[in-house]
Length: 299
Image 1 (cartoon, helix red, strand yellow):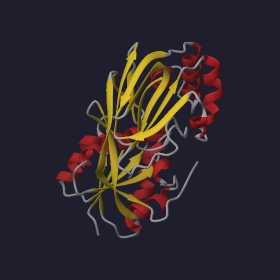
Image 2 (tube, helix red, strand yellow):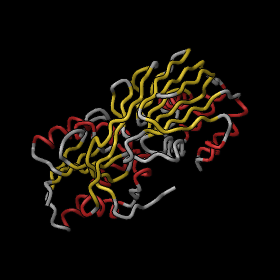
Image 3 (cartoon, rainbow, N blue to C red):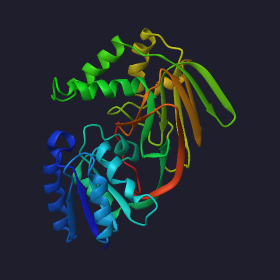
Image 4 (cartoon, helix red, strand yellow):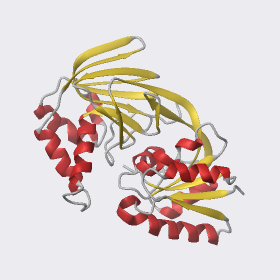
C-alpha cells in the first residue's frame, strides 16, 4: 500500500475544499488507508505542501482541488517516482475533465487508489510548467478581468460572465507571429492556446484532439477575426467544433514560439504568469498520474 498524502486547499471550489477533505479522509479511513494531511494556507502554498509530503516519504500525493491547486501541487512531482492522484473540487476542473476523472469524490478516490499509473506529459511556457492548457490573448484578457471583478461579485459564475462581456466590449486583437517546426503564420490573432489537455475556462473544448500522454501539444490559433466572429465562435468552443472554422489554425507539435503586439500576459492552467514573447514546448512523460483503466468522460 502506497504511503499516502492529501494536499488540499480548503478554499477550492468556493470553499468546498474543506468539506471534500472530510469526505475523502473518511473514505480512506474506511478502506484502512493511512494518510497524512497537508492543508494549504494560500493559493501558492500547495507546492510547499507537496515538497513536505515528499520529504516525509509520500508515494501517492492525492490532490483535492481545482486546476490552480493542481498546477501548484503537481510541480514538485515532476521527475520523481511519486504518483499524483486527483479528486476534483475546484470551479473549473478542466484537467480532471481531460483525464476522465469524475467529480464524484468516491469514484475519484477509487481511481486514485486502484487505477492505472501512467506517465503524463507536461508543458513549458518560457520554462514555466503547465499541465493542462497555456495560452495568450483573449482568454487571458477574460481571466484578468475576472480576477478584478471578483471584488464586485463572488456569486458563482457571475464574475466570469461579467469579465467575458467586458473583454468583448474592449476586444484586443493583437498582431501576432507564430512559428513552429516547418511553418509559421503572421496575422491578427484573438487566442493562441497550447493544449496538453483539451479543456479550459470551465469546460470549453479549446483543443479537442489533445492527449496528455502522446508526447505532443495541440496548438489552436484563432486569427483574422472581428467581434462578430467571436460571438459565432464562442459557443462552438463548448463542443470543440471551432476547429472546423477557416478562422482557426489547429495542429499538433512539440514547440511553438509566439510574439504579439501589443504583448499579452500568459495563462498557465488558469493562473496568470509571464508575458509574450513565449515559447511553448512539451515535456514528455513528466510525471506519474493515476487514471482509470477505462476512462470516464464528462462533457
